[in-house]
Amino acid sequence: MDQPHDYAISVHGLVVSFGAHLVIDNLDLDVRQGEILGIVGASGGGKSVLLRTILGLLPKRSGSIRVLGNDPDAIGIEAMRDVERRWGVLFQQGALFSALTVRQNVEFPMREYLELPDALRTEVAETKLRMVGLAHEDMEKFPAELSGGMTKRVALARSLALEPDIVFLDEPTSGLDPIAAGEFDVLIKTLQRTLGLTVFMVTHDLDSLEAVCDRIAALADGRIVAVGSMTTMLACQHPWVKAYFGGPRARAESKAVAPPPQKP
Ligand SMILES: Nc1ncnc2c1ncn2[C@@H]1O[C@H](COP(=O)(O)OP(=O)(O)OP(=O)(O)O)[C@@H](O)[C@H]1O
Image (cartoon, rainbow, N blue to C red; front, side):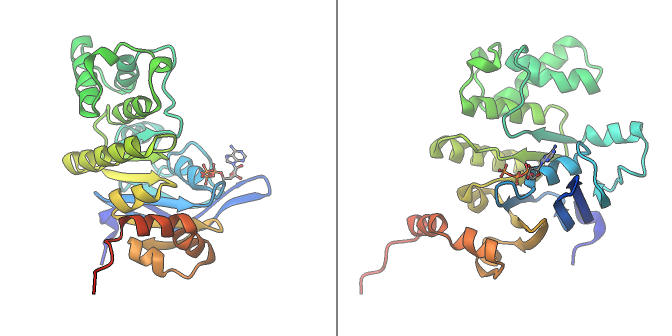
């Protein structure tokens, strides 16, 4: 059985609303240290709101959130800054600074949180960019000059800039073609294993869920209605989970990967 200290993130009884619009309704979720947890849910169902609330970017109405054993409500602003240094975020659109080069984008969090000599900061940024597969000649480009896949890689490098314990990924493969998405999945898995990261990944991508995630959590009706392996999802009787994992796209995917029938 999991112990509380095994969790990188613990969310209990979380309620988030915008005026009368209740988006998260008494949600419980524990993310284990060192796992890749995929969050799925309907469009507009509250996945990004959940992620942003955990990050402290949106206020909660009630409930508790602990990140790396810390309760943001209980510790001061300074202590919270130390916790923030231990996570990295890849936002849905990459959210790179358009006026900064690729290298400067990765250096940005280091400038904000670390006091490093310029040459060392540049070296660390270039190392992170090489880790995600960026070529040296791309490091002085501006975000507008990058492809979608490159933008995601740079955003991933920036999320790793402070050598975090947790990485939050909001739809990391959206907008990528299946080959680029597959390569990005492999990159996430490799980095997670190499760096021992906990990954909280919001995704619609069934391939990513299958290929990358240790566990999946399904968000419906403002709550987590199922958590576990793909097998758990396929056995879940919640109507949304059934429709999502048993729908035509999911069935087409499972046929595509199924071995050919044996000849009698
Ligand atoms: N800042 C905000 N102010 C008011 N409403 C918001 C705000 N942010 C999100 N919402 C609402 O909360 C709901 C959940 O949005 P959210 O972006 O979390 O959905 P999602 O599950 O991430 O969707 P998608 O898969 O389409 O990205 C939506 O109805 C959205 O309009």
